[in-house]
Length: 589
Figure 1 (cartoon, rainbow, N blue to C red):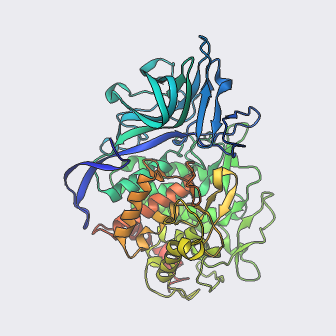
Figure 2: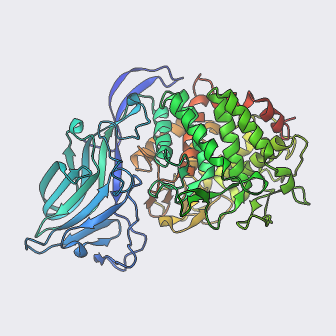
Figure 3: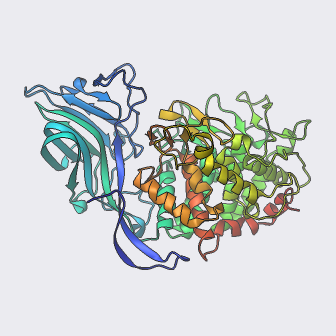
């Protein structure tokens, strides 16, 4: 089957603005790219280091992996590939296992190839896995097993590889008999000399317009991080529940789930359960001034508490509270809406306004020391915090920069406010900073698109057309990176911004063209965007992070509504809440 992305057939018409075709497509989801977190010393195969595993500690679907076989210490790596040279003895075999759902030790989680997305996604929106592909070279026996939680093999195939260069080995799968699969294991048989570049699944998408597929895949990326046990959202998909949960992601996930319910992707009952559970959990997490912590984990007794070293954050509290309030309105949860509004009004934001008239970032981990940094920089984070300030105290005032430019030209900062409120999508001049937010957002988008031609024109780049100068994980996940367009020589992009800014783009067809290219290049996948991409090398970080997933899902939702005749339920809900309307008067009196 040539190509990464192709239309297999057109199934008919779908009422979706000017784009009326509902398509069934074939796409590929990488299970594992064999990239590492260190550069090889040379072109020879490197030995695996047991003190520090050089491989990313997770797969591209947010699960774990490991090595098997009596000769597994012979497995080594080159840049972007893994391989081994084995003797001919009977015990000279080795390979790798990959969990297909959560961590391998979690036996309650398996993958259903007839419906591989989390079970909360309704059947008509589930893709199907119909095949897999291994990109491999060398010679020798290459075996792939699919097994259940008891290691019972459900499907197996052995092929003799004889390729001097990397080639794609395609396997058709008996989809209907693979409904409780836990692991995929590949094994190099005795006498083999093989290199493997990646393993990936062939998926057939549901019948839907392309734009709706973007929202679905992005929402599933966020849903992959959600825990029904804790009611919170893990910061990353591949970690334990209650080890590093994000309050901001949890709030935005509630909003994205309410939107997904309105699209028929999940049930309204599930969306309400998510909302109520998050609200209940948050009650015991409130700290000084009524603030919520940035991150949460379980203590030794299993109770959810502030993660050690984490501050009590005004922006995280803001994103959580405002998102839940809007979600409750969308879902018709009137009684809960009143409780959420009352809770928000109990947060003492006014007491966190410093003598410069600026709202502090929050309170240090000691629960006493007010953080000296404040929300003054122009942008969406400051704007949302000031809306929350006015919601908590209808007479409170604060100041904000009139720079009309987000900090360092960082992409997400110019868009985050418009995920919640339609007022920032208008041409009106705000009364606090004097900005036309829509025009500033367009200006940032123009700068994003022209960055490589204006600042990197003399560089050799794998992706000169790509933009997304925002913030997120550093290259190979080694720290946090900010890469706005006002900085020089930025070589790392965070493509979540492409969907965040899609609704403000004056050329929707250009957005569609870019998204198709992102799919072709395995940057946008059936589990949403990769975390980051190197402009110079094209190297991708496939980490599934919940905050960016929510940004992408909500951005895709607003693009759908902007380019169709459908009502925007998020904007309708936020504008239909009297207290929020009053709070927004700090910008639009």
